[in-house]
Length: 96
Image 1 (spheres, rainbow, N blue to C red):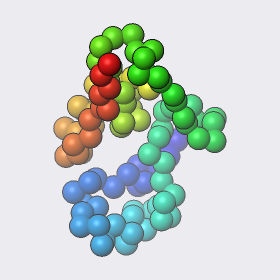
Image 2 (cartoon, rainbow, N blue to C red):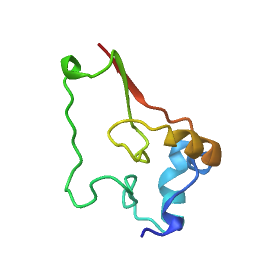
Image 3 (cartoon, helix red, strand yellow):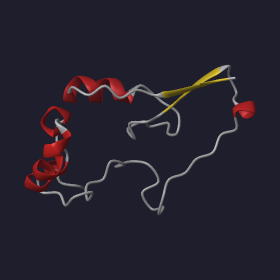
């Protein structure tokens, strides 16, 4: 499990000029903290392809927060993350 020191609240990371210094102080190497902590961790890179013509519904939401238990589909997990961290991440919505 990754150290909680690795996750810097978004309000601390802004403005971007200071990001590298704050991340370094938080115990992470520049670019060394995982964003994805749940999905296909044994793979070198997570890539999923969905053809719009193959969507099962006229509108489908895909996860962008890496917290969904139904990845690559959104399950709304970003809502708790946003509330807890003051973030504003949401799904990618594809329509036919």
